[in-house]
Image (cartoon, rainbow, N blue to C red; front, side, top):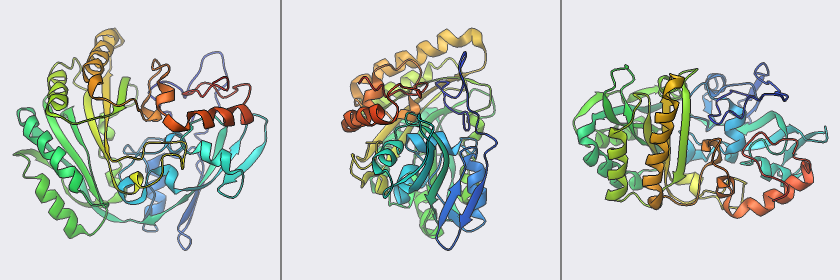
Length: 383
């Protein structure tokens, strides 16, 4: 267990052994080399605070309490991915304890096959005990969140669909059908964004977003990069019950967006929502087979989040998520980000690796033939 954020519960086990890494929080920043050595117990909030002191940052999560290890090993979607790629694109080396008990330091120059597999292969190949990342000059960014009333969702979603293909590498814009975080249950459509370039250019982009409709809330402005990583924290409280579904979109047609709005209006929990993530820029310029994580085409990803507090409401919330995902399925690709898989997604693990599946199975046979590391989105050595 690193940060313990996995919604499928892969960080805990009954009748097994849990290796808790949360006290391993060492971090060394080399500002001259622009590299960071970090241990797996760190959260992205802690990592960002340490690197920000040197005017540096690495693509990490969008919630500050997420652990660096699990997020990185699955790929590592984050605010800086259009400019600098996802987390694994910034990993230079990993220290890992493999199933045979050996401590290995893997990189492009040392056991490159294992290094390749660990950049997206999740916890299938060993326990990562240290990471070396590249870091980049990032300090104050133009970021925040702007929200509109749900009746404006059709035109806001239309704006998002037209606006995002024009975004430069410095800008990431996502969009979500969510509930106001004040507990009122008010349904809104929100656009969080982060512009890591010139602040004046960020202001221009924000002014465009402000024209989508009449804002209910406008929290866009300059802020330190570590603050950006906390903007969504309130939406993921500790102890909440979660059930997620996810896939990459084939299209963002009017029909697709209409299904999303209609389904969101029926959400039984005031903590649930549907998020659209935009993929463009550097993350999409890397070949699909360069890392175990394969999704390198420009486009959009759905994160369907059912979240609630009362165990008595499990059935109704899970049913809503499943029904919504089923309604959207004709518009979804057979492709899913491994970090968003649930505990009942079965063979969809194959869809998380696409053209890289067979190579990963072969490497699993080499490094973990007995499937010691199996409480994960498992790459079974039997294929």
